[in-house]
Length: 302
Image (tube, rainbow, N blue to C red; front, side, top):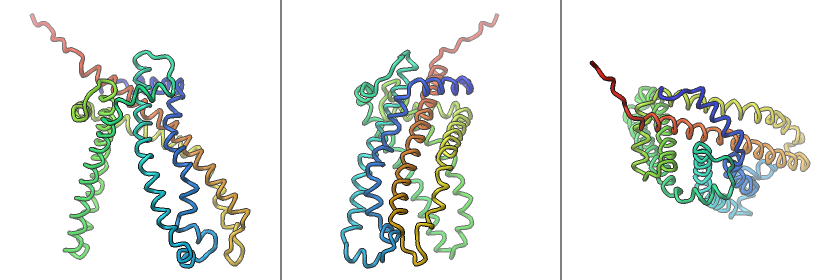
């Protein structure tokens, strides 16, 4: 490995802990989702069943509900995509500034200074998403066609190939993260950044894979340690229904409030963990890029 994993993780912790504004940026997509959540609950087709009503009658009386649900999803998806990309960009830009010597980061400064890179970063994500969808749909086409032609026997042969998507996904995500840093740190174009990310990954794939496993494992442990205990009260939800299956109004109100509280907590935890995750990629990119650009000194042979 061309970097010290322990030094990378230590530096990641220092940057992430000392600059909590990065946490706030990673929480922004979750905050947006929190505003839309009441609409999702009320417009969800499962809501009338939860309230003990007849879903058939409900949709007959209110036929516009499914359209509202689809509309809310569409309205939420567009700003969510843009805000998620902006959160990744601002976090990456802020961590790079700290790596270059900045001592303080301001929320609005990160927004204004990172905007010139937005469309290029969106382009990287769009290319990755298009390639992944093409690979997935292509595989599923052959999977379904083979299953139909062989009356399901081919599906048994295709199952092991699903595991091949794991290294492909790891490689793709790693290249995207490295390309993201190349755009912000070295002001590269979309295709140049992707090519540079692939070059760094190919030369240091083992260390990068180990780093990704460590970062994802740390994110998973942090998320489960905080949010899992909050799920225990959900076991008492059936107590909110009487013997005839009718819900208690008090219990439904508590369920709604508790759902919002759990969502808020999970978004906070996700924002903190993602800030450290993005910072880790910034740190490792700086180390790999430095090693890749370092001159090679030949030894004199007498």
